[in-house]
Amino acid sequence: MLRKTLGILLTALLTSSAFADEAGLRKAIEATYPKVRIESITKTPYAGLYEVFLDGQILYTDDKFNFLIAEGKLIDTKSKRDLTGERMDELTKVDFSSLPLDQAIKVVKGSGARKLVVFSDPDCPYCKRLEQKELVGMTDVTIYTFLYPLEQLHPDSANKSRAIWCSADRSVAWQDWILNGQLPKVAVTCDTPVEKTAELAKKLGITSTPTLIFADGKRMLGAYPAKDIEKAISNASSNKK
Image (tube, rainbow, N blue to C red):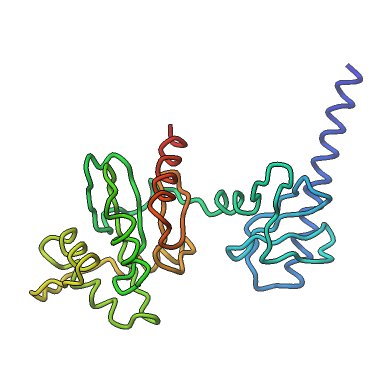
């Protein structure tokens, strides 16, 4: 009984110590950088190193905030795993079920059984490459495209987004444009979700296009090869089972 009680006390002391270290570290960071938003602090199993997730990036420091390791990756030398990349995947996961898919253009390929979300700018060259080279041959997938014009880079992309959204058949209009460079010939005005998509992107920390989100909530930035996208879609399906 005494041994069990001592074990409970020791566990409590170690836990409270860890929380104290994290609380002290949080205060030290906030004192030095009062404008940053700290989302989480986690102690790693490596030599007193702490992972700090703030403003959409992972940093590393010690419990006294004596140094910062920024824009680097923590690699496990035995397994060769990119631990920073894995943690970033987890920390930036999206709740797929919460996405307002009615505000996206829906394109069904084959059975449409698998799901993929893409934030895309009509004038983004990498978005066109993604559609023309990587997604075009995929099947049995439903692709939901959120029109996310980055007007600071592509001044006319918002106009194109409105023209596509307001067309009689959005999925056809989107593919006509992104694959063949043809916009709807008849100009029609309507209410569009473009502003809501911009708010959603800001909330999710999406700043570039294309950004892909898979059914398990993990994301991929850029026009990756089809084989990588297929692998991510398959992994997402397995993770949800």
